[in-house]
Length: 273
Ligand code: ATP
Ligand code: MG
Image (cartoon, rainbow, N blue to C red; front, top):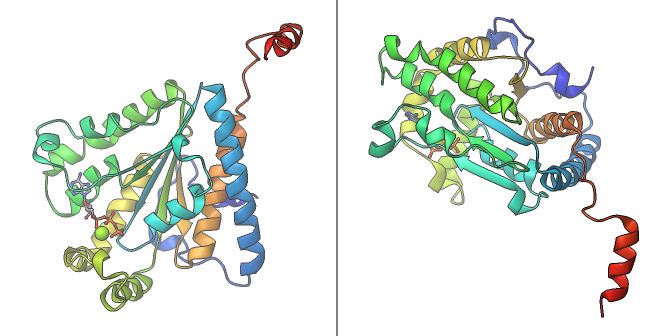
């Protein structure tokens, strides 16, 4: 079984996150894995180049996780080789007053990827059934209707040529303690520490429940969820690179037919002074 298939949630599965591994790298050679990751990142860049030339399809990668799981570094490592013109990264923060004055998908739709591009959502519309639910920002009567709205919204994107991959970076609560402590003690990471992260951590179990429910309800064949063991960075980055590469390979982007036939090209070549 490929790595991408291994961590993909099967259609119809009811997800309980305590059944999923946060570390699955026991006995795995870090050196070998890092070499494969390097290969994957180069392959992803090549495939994106074709995707751009083809100009027919796009990819949307949705990244969700608890704080300090490593969304930022995953993006940097997996997509660092891609032509910057071919990727569009959007980080969704607390909604602004203007965003709150609209339906929850209003701010999202605007950032979906252009044809030929890879769009990456660092947090996403899923916050509206996660943080909103756990913190009672909206009542259940509102958020419970959003699962169906999300599925139809994503289906609309799929029908328009966007392949969607949704990745939950599955960090353990113990590992999060280490990572948050590092943000408090490492001067280069201090700026990342948000006192609010501790409040979120206190509600860990509620978040796990909300994530499990959400992944179960919004996992479709065209827009599947993947649950990635996240405690070890090198393994996490590798798994995400495998998922992205496999997805792009299955999309099989092709360079378009040349605009001129080879004979005409030869004539034109002679004309170039
Ligand atoms: P890190 O994982 O490195 O901590 P981050 O994604 O948490 O990065 P921050 O700027 O620390 O980035 O936090 C963004 C905050 O915005 C998160 O707490 C998230 O829950 C919140 N947020 C995002 N979307 C919504 C939303 N629709 N409603 C309420 N809060 C939201
Ligand atoms: Mg944060």
